[in-house]
Length: 382
Image (cartoon, rainbow, N blue to C red; front, side, top):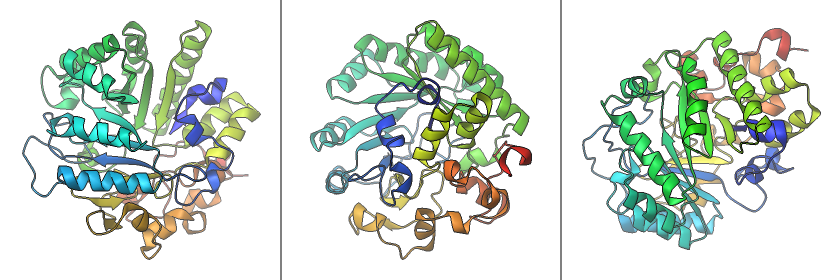
């Protein structure tokens, strides 16, 4: 995750203390000294939408074998013991779980910051107030365009209107809320409209995700390198515009760490270079983990075909520090394993080879170069 706001203006938000501490890049089992990784828990595979780019292949059916309430609480206990700072409840659609509020409250009681990733369509005024009252740190609502563009990607007519109402209900309740937007070939020109939208709706935060070729996302057409650069130029320009007009918004990009390098090359600021070196690039398997609805532990939500253990059988911390699995062991010290352009890149300390799931999806080799790197050979080779 790249905080464009942090890199440009050194403004501090909650996540920055995990991303840009001075020793973050040297961690092996967590986000910072003395704490574990940020964990995303896909708490259910069931969803009321059918998004084209869903890495979970979620749909409206019910799935047997998902963690029960008692099993989920035991899992949260184990996360607390391992000093996990943030638990992101995701799905499917997490608000479909009947016990989701009970589990959000339980995580909070264990000093884990609960956050919520949702499509927003189920957030009524009452739900928004309940989320706020439970102390949920942040609600991320997925939106992939304005109006019919979003409905096309979400697979259900009217999903845009319902998501917009969910956003408005969070804002009205005083709940910190942001947008999650996945950039692809068919919507990247919507970026200016998204910036207009978050200003109009008084939204605090927006995360622009780069497409990862996983689940149904494998069949969605990605942007070209030139379009990636164009998208970043829009994001940088609009972030600066917000700052110049005194509008405090947190702008982030996710799942492509060459964004930070591109920003440094474009701005030439030593401060940017220092921040991205501190961060160290992609930290799946280190500072970020995913647990699926059935308790299986993975390096991130897009790499669910590599499993390290199950929280029903062993504590999360034991799984996360067990180096017997070659993928997990490799992720914790991956630079010597990387191939191609990644292995020779002068910014490897800032990117860490980017996203392994994309490399494996396109080449069949987990350690090959990430095909979504849009930097030129002239930019990355000395």
